[in-house]
Image 1: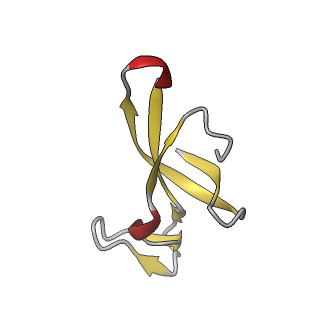
Image 2: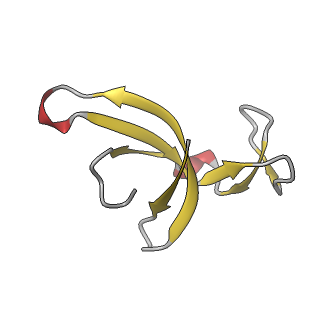
Amino acid sequence: MEIDELDTENLWYNSTVIGVRNLHGMEGKEVFVGLRVYRENGDKVDTNSNLKFFGWSSKYDEWLSVFSPRI
């Protein structure tokens, strides 16, 4: 799923939800977000999946609460 994510420098990026996990207690769920979108004409290649993408490498992937104002 593609979403918009606000990074730590207050810039919005098209991003991809890579995973979802359930948390115990009031937190609910978290999503694992990659600051990239996969496209056939992408200018970079993901070394894990060999898919082309636009955006940032997996170094910047992070878990965020589904309630986070950054998504």
